[in-house]
Amino acid sequence: MESEKTEGKPKGGRPKSEKKEWNPKGGRPKKEAKEKKDFRITLRFTDDEFKELEKRLKDSGYDEMSTYARLKLLSTESNAVHNPRPLLLAISKLNSEIHKVGVNINQIAKYVNYLDRNKMIDPKLLGDYNTHFKRMMDLQSEFLLAIRTYLRSNKKK
Image (cartoon, rainbow, N blue to C red; front, top):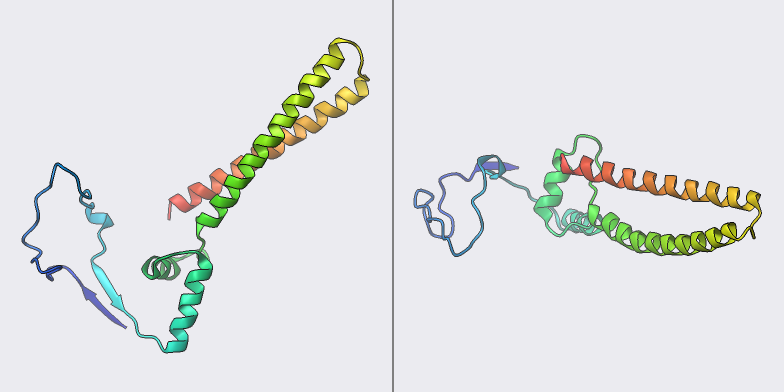
């Protein structure tokens, strides 16, 4: 394994000392010093090792080998590398389902209120409805808290 500092080496045919001025018409903003990656590591693999590495990359959901390798090498909690993309897709699907359930609950609530106003409902049934509704709201709150906790834990990394 070789490690080399890339600072001071010409990139794209232009020496590092010759910096391009900022263009007000657009372009990518300059990176801060802490965001710049100054060191490069070169690794060599056999054909079988590289195929295994590519398989793991594909299974993890990442597109770039460097991102996957960096996360894998610098992971402190466990050896697992998690890609939030599949989770976010699942949450997106669940969000629409939760919305549909909410619409149904609103329709039921409207009907139950109608029956209650006209004294056409058993108070025990109304109590059961309120119990189930509270349970559904508690589950939704737990779901949102779990998502926020996951997203915050990944933001710190």
